[in-house]
Length: 249
Image (tube, rainbow, N blue to C red; front, top):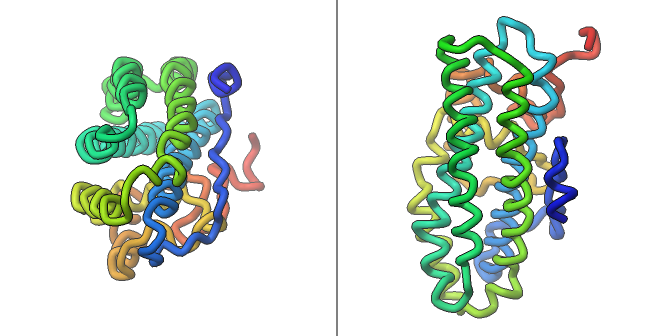
């Protein structure tokens, strides 16, 4: 699988084995946890694909917005990995070997930092936009990152989570939610997640209160609305393209 995933792109999504999973079902914590992880990983992969596809097409007036979109993607990766390293891996390590997962995270740090610095410089207009350089730095990150995102899912499968009691898994999910509680209130990350999630996979995901979803759609979305034109979906969940059918490609 690694050779396939380290092609230049676009990058394959993780199959969702149980679409329309009921996240309100508190009796299936193992499946809920695994499905949430796969959905989160797919949000990141879709964004990497959107950067890859749109980098050569971006209009001059949208160059800083594409950089902002990319920076938001990397911010989600950093937060997602930090949550795993501080909450998930330590609790799972008691019965499962999570060493490989940690190693893969650390191997991504240097290419991610190089990509982040470039995007920040473009966003701040310190560095001129260069699609070839952006794609070169993207390739250095996306190949190993997407491979890691695919490889990690079997390590947290419901079958492997069977090594833990339902109480232990419920605690794990609770602790992770506590750690990530600010994520749903972010005026940048929450709109990013919503516009890079395919609702046909899980209409009610992410499982956050209705008022937070409303805030993300009606307040948070508009703060950086220019970023989300690169997302594959609108805030209402409809498919979209950066270039409309009337535009020349």
